[in-house]
Length: 602
Image (cartoon, rainbow, N blue to C red; front, side, top):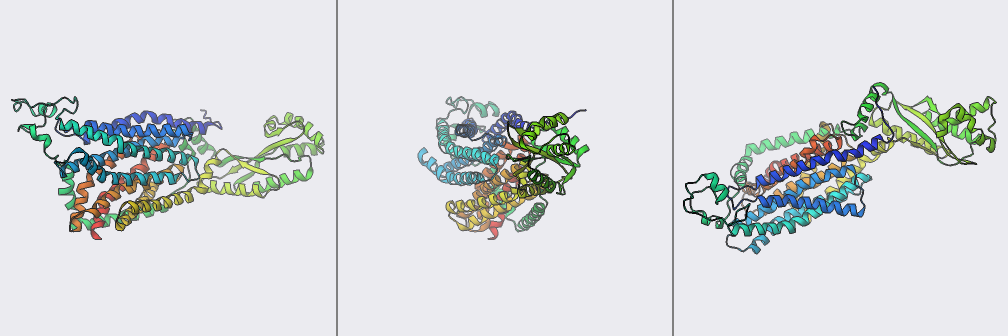
């Protein structure tokens, strides 16, 4: 059995990941469209908002196209992580659509006689604030993410941030126009699919309910001429939130239960945060069926004692024929070999061999000309040394040696190894550099924690400022900030329980997490604060009945957007799904359970 690996394998397999996700993309579109259509269905052939739903998904798709086109045009590198972006934008774009539709239906219930202009104006005053807040916070989260030290994270944030901007523009312009066209169709009593006028024939009452739903106006047997001009009925889900869900959660024993539940959630999360592991397992860079995975497995099974074989490079041209210089190089090598992670018996140095050969009296290496001319003798003895010396006619530009590391088992070891090797190389008189292809991944550990914390803190601060500017109520902003902090702690904690390490991939997701946690809580707390009801409990019920359903729809649609990634063959995409799932789950939990209950106490 042969397992194999080349120095380019890791990179090629990593880049090959993107192709595995593209088929999943069509599945996502299908799921999102289906979900949108189902949640916009009505049992009336005029009221049916199927086209509205489809256009909402199309506008999210357009946003992906526009942003990717613009970014590629500007030459922003398209990295593997960017392939996650379309899944995210689909979910979020659809959220905005639901909020718009909900507001439109609300405005039509309030003002039956008004014309289309004032209704659309009313819709925009209500929905646009919510949508603007969420878009602003998401976009800010992403543009703050571009300050990181990781270029891949930067690319991802640029692509996604731009896509959100486009998504917002399309929702505000394109989708608003679609709503009006759809309204005109309804006013003209036209069928949702064919747009033909729907007549009311005599003798329809005898036909079946199914026929009525498809071809006439609705199932009710009375003459349905007037039906479209009555105010639109509330959606059954809004009624559920108003009649059952709200009152259930404002009961004082249930409130106590919620507080206890929150306590356990917080406790679990904080414990999880202490268990979090940093570092990326290099196996995770490839997809599950890649040829490098068996290689890594065999390497771990049979050769786990050995770490990477590190290259030590003399980067400038030095006088190797001068004995003092040779001694300096030897000292440097010995310093490097004295590190606890290095086995000195396994080093490989052309200079040592050359010096030994010279000492045995075979050749002379005391001056420049003989040193360079006699190298051919060395290459006859050990042919592979030819690759270790970069020489021109009269000088050696650079050369390299190898040292073998041992007992490098954990991320902490890798981190220590890297810092110690670099430290020793820096102290050396001769210009040295240590290198191994895996070092680029070890480098992550050095900055990942501080980078993550910095990004999360800055982003949370920015969210606070945005919500202060847009939500004219300081108390409400405090709740939003509380929700952000709470969701981040939860996601970070449960990430550890779900075997996700802290690396550049999960770091991106934590930044996104901030943007999303705002979405859910901002809507609900804003509705609570602006509600006209007298008692706190009634306010909570009203906030839930207004926005409970759109928030739930938004959560479900975002999860549907990323759920296909759970089936992806690559770790990157699976991690993305896991964290998004946690973010949406906890975000929705805060928006629909914790925040409404806590608001009633204060």
